[in-house]
Image 1 (spheres, rainbow, N blue to C red):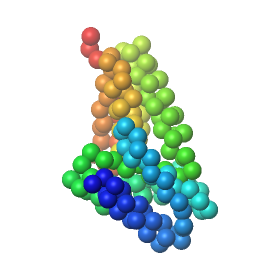
Image 2 (cartoon, rainbow, N blue to C red):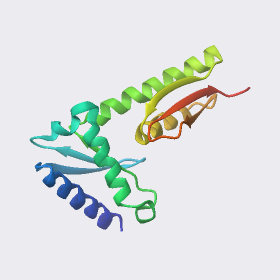
Image 3 (cartoon, rainbow, N blue to C red):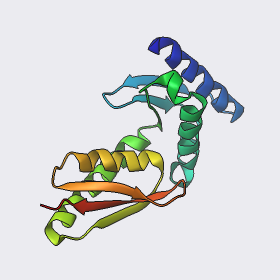
Image 4 (tube, rainbow, N blue to C red):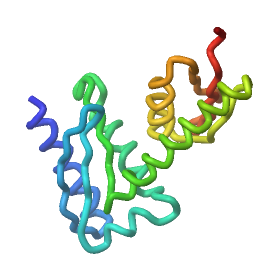
Length: 152
């Protein structure tokens, strides 16, 4: 079932890229947390302009077009030229730094505004530390994540 869904996603992304005038290769990578679509080829760097806005948009479109009930717990991450891997590592590092700061200072720390994908990375990183918790605040697409020390 997953192979069929993955093939539909690849076909969908390929047609979106072709509409943008791009002919890129798509490499599928299974991770414990998501399915990563790695895009490469001439013109892939166009997706990275303006802090990866086109990449973010493409990822939202993919995860919206393939509704959650159809993909169950499968979450697709769209990356190009390894752009997200580096950014994700920086975000995890910042989340851990702020978690430590929240514990030592005793005051909540904020990070954001972040899109849903970035918030998920922060929440997962914070969840690794039992002494802190995190919550998203705001009512827009971009929200702030507050990292707080647990009462203890």
